[in-house]
Image 1 (cartoon, helix red, strand yellow):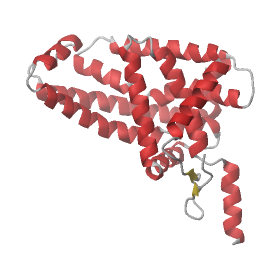
Image 2 (cartoon, helix red, strand yellow):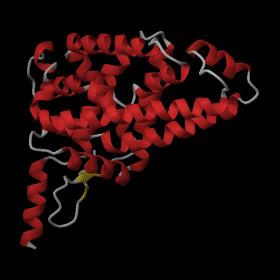
Image 3 (tube, one colour):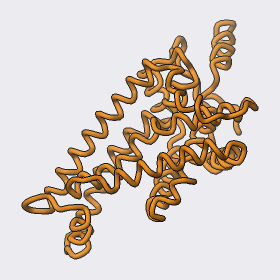
Image 4 (cartoon, one colour):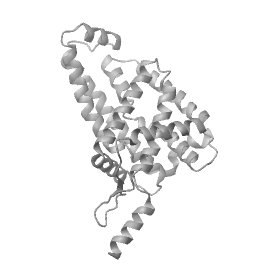
Amino acid sequence: MTEDFLEPERGSPFPEIREIGMDAPVRWLRAGWADFRKAPVPSLFYGIVLAAMGAALANSPGTGAVELALVTGFLLVGPFLLMGLYDTARRVQRGEDVMIGPTTVAWKANVSSIGFYAIILALLLAVWIRISIVVVALFFEGTPPSASSLIRDVMASPEAITFVLAYLAAGFGFALFVFATSVVSLPMLYDREKMDTLTAMITSFNALRLNFWPMLTWATIIVALTALGFATFYVGLVLVLPLVGLATWHAYREVVAPPESNRESSEMRNAA
């Protein structure tokens, strides 16, 4: 891990960002897997709960556009759903015993900021559902199809590729925005009790901006692992989602400099 910092402007309230290499996502996954092995019970607990939630979203009543939006939107609200795993990873890192109960209320560490961010994620999910409905309506006439008929119609339609590309384009732009403002923000809100939502989101955006390709690789890995979990009839989610959550904690810890480093850098600048 490099020790280089990308420092904010003098007097900036935002934490410093570390430079990382392309090998960082693999390192985070290894660290997450090590945490999983040290705390298997809470990790599997969250894996089962989140897999059940993913299955419920995928089979929720409604039109195919809504169901498709909920499944893909699972990735949008994922950072908040993984909150208990950030607590698990920090406890493992400190050498503490990990019990399921305390991790379920990890959000209390910074309830106002985390709660506000949860509201933002809920609103973004609502917007994405509306976008999904609009995109589907552009390609299908009449009453929106159910999920099963939507998939069948897409496979049989000569415009299937166009629809898939249009949906992916809309989803990519939306997902990139959400990822940019959430990749390290929620672990940081949990870890730093006085951190506010806006500062955390801007710091997360800076982390992506200054380490674009490693972070984009990390986002691709998350999407691929989650898709694999859904493709295995949700069984894979039991392992994949805890792994991603634990690894995300290590991503935050490596990318965002601790408060002590910020103070040291500020003192060095003032002395100069």
